[in-house]
Amino acid sequence: EDQVTQSPEALRLQEGESSSLNCSYTVSGLRGLFWYRQDPGKGPEFLFTLYSAGEEKEKERLKATLTKKESFLHITAPKPEDSATYLCAVQGTSGGSNYKLTFGKGTLLTVNP
Amino acid sequence: SAVISQKPSRDICQRGTSLTIQCQVDSQVTMMFWYRQQPGQSLTLIATANQGSEATYESGFVIDKFPISRPNLTFSTLTVSNMSPEDSSIYLCSLLQHEQFFGPGTRLTVL
Image 1 (cartoon, rainbow over the protein chains, first blue to last red):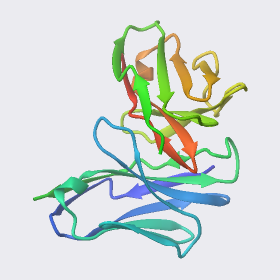
Image 2 (cartoon, chains in turn cyan, green; image 1 turned 180 degrees about the vertical axis):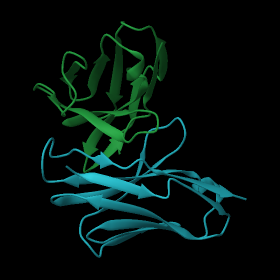
Image 3 (tube, rainbow over the protein chains, first blue to last red; image 1 turned 135 degrees about the vertical axis):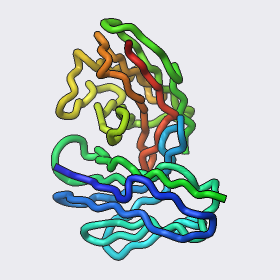
């Protein structure tokens, strides 16, 4: 069974203070690892898909990286508008729907001005 | 990406009743999904809904409790039947357009 663990559960940063969020996963065969951003009262917003170890993707102040066991979401010089819950999900090759996403519980990021 | 809307956005229901949640997409998509996000828990896939075929349910979810319709390529409904307080959750539809994109969710409270 695919599993995703995100840490920390919550992270509070000062504006401009860079940090990283962790996503550890176990999956029989990785089709893809996904990062989403979720604001209160809204559905998840797609950020990145990573397919293989060593892959990196960037979008504004965010950079996602992938190894065979974990992914990191690096946030460089964050701003208050980056405050949200960041969700990590994997899509594996075993069991259930071929398109099933298995999510972690998320990291609640708060960036103070 | 396609624009996804859900109705209702929130509702408060009595135990033992049923609620049907609608998901409308502004373009045609083959694959749609229904997820549940319980308080403090991970987003969990309930079922996959393809137009023209029966929905495929994940382990722990059954059609009698969560019947799904997919009458065309832009619309789907999820019914939460015979509700109990444990069904209080956010229900989200999503679609596959290269990636999975999510609707805004329906926040359900069962008293």
